[in-house]
Image 1 (cartoon, rainbow, N blue to C red):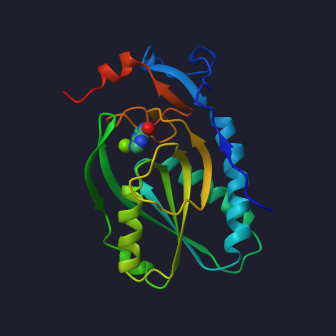
Image 2: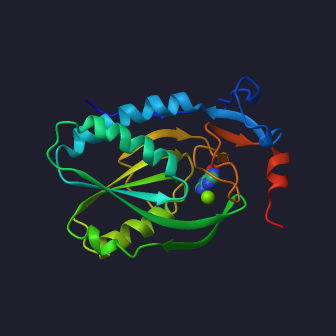
Length: 214
Ligand code: HPA
Ligand code: MG
């Protein structure tokens, strides 16, 4: 069956006051655009889609830190269930990529923690990332993996932003397509804050000002 997506419309915003948000973030958020429950439901289906395409092959899951830590654990849990009868175990690896400061990319993409990249040589790798917008970070990462002899790679993305890409990158499994708004929560940060928030939210101008890097 063809994969379907969820496109969050440009004007879709749920009231923050209708959700249980930590008090420390009072006034910092404008709206909720993807509640945690919807993420959970969507990730379950995404795992089934991934299993249907990749099948019972060996699979190495690569978590791109920090932003995808929540998505990654949810996806690994669901993939474990989807691959219940699979004779090949999955493995997990972690790398760290950094490019954003305030609301924009610094243009410098740092890939860190690649000490064990050699372990991925000859493997099928599913790269699990939180967000694709310009495509630059993912392009650099996929290039690095290829250079290091990865056999085949796919990408699983929590959100894909509807903005024009500077570089086209494969978006094999996408949970949500979202408008061009700066979002936080469910692992995504604004200057390292808001990762612990369990819903995906749009920030208020007050919040943006409050946590701006001085
Ligand atoms: N939020 C947080 N981090 C990001 C975003 C965003 O909207 N886009 C790229 N990195
Ligand atoms: Mg970030």
